[in-house]
Length: 230
Image 1: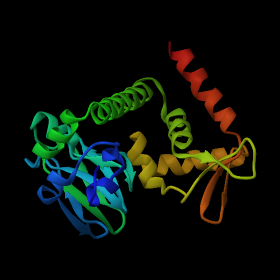
Image 2: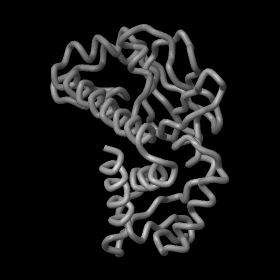
Image 3: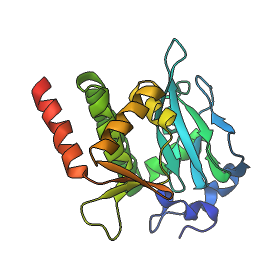
């Protein structure tokens, strides 16, 4: 049965899998806010498992413009693509908070995955999910205008609001420049759209959160825009 700190990583939790041979081949380290954990074109192939803290994943165009792909929190991991194909890093990963990460060498990651069918299946499903999410975002960028891309991103970032049926909430409230980097526009454009949405009663700000009053309407508008383009 697995023992040691590796067994605390959700991805590796599987009855009957002995992780003890790999414990000394991995290492744990703490990181600080704003620290770069992985950068574009790094030749490292380690996989990083977040024990605590939060990081942001960025991509950069040839002109230097950065696009935010998303954030990850404790329990998630990144770097698996380089571990699988040995090609340089395709994104930048920067810490949003202080935290701790388990660094697993590519050889160890591959050995554990290939030695356990349930863990391998877990990896395949995760990669499939990420491809589907990227396809969705690619479709939105190709077919939707700024306003509807913003609607879609807010819905993606939000969760149901406790005690308020039919509403959703984004907490903490997103910065306008961060949303702009997510959907490929300027901060000022996001600010203008928020003003319009607030005027329509679609969103509201409370202490520490952005409330989406009519997520059903935003979803309907996004779907209608996609149908019109088709």
